[in-house]
Structures are given as C-alpha cells and as structure tokens.
Length: 107
Image (cartoon, rainbow, N blue to C red; front, side, top):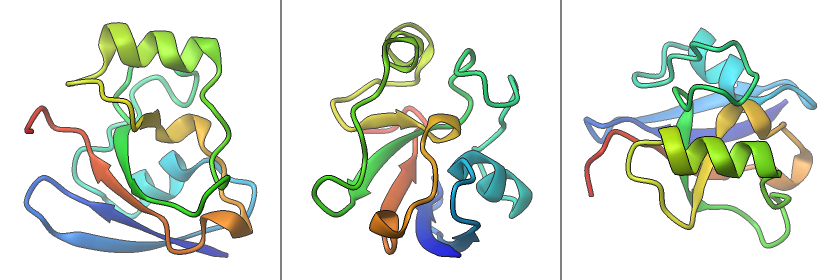
C-alpha cells in the first residue's frame, strides 16, 4: 500500500492507502474524498478527479500524456501547471507521502 494525502475544499486532510499500481482516483472515490466524483470511470475524459500536486518526490510523477493534458486544459476547474487527473496517476512507492489538493475552482 502507498499512503497519499488528499486535501478537500474544506481544508480537511485525508490520508488514503492505495494499493500499488491502482489509479489514485479509485481509492480516493472509495474513501469518500469530497470532490473526487470519477464520472467517466478513469478514461481521462471528464476531469472530475482533477487535483493539484502539492507535494511529491522529484521524479515520482511521470509527465501527463496528451489526452490527460487536453482534458485538464479544456475541462478542468482552474487548470494549473501542477494539475493532474487522479485516474491517470497510479500508486507507486515513489508517491509515498505525496499530497494532492482537490481542484474546486478556488485559488
């Protein structure tokens, strides 16, 4: 298991254990993280699992592929340089302790 943290719009921090190799979206949705809706089921089409990377080890996250970047740009709530779709980020040991803020449109 890989432990990551999600920060909800309320500021509530949620520590979530994610099975290695599983997209973070599933674990966050199943744990009831507020704001992770996962409407398209993980196909990088809806941006309802859009988060900002607050903290992660250098090299822990590969660059987003084109379909993820396009979805964030056109569908994401306030896209930023550190935006990611949690359906496209898989749990690896390098992500242990990483922190993600759920994108809610607030600055």
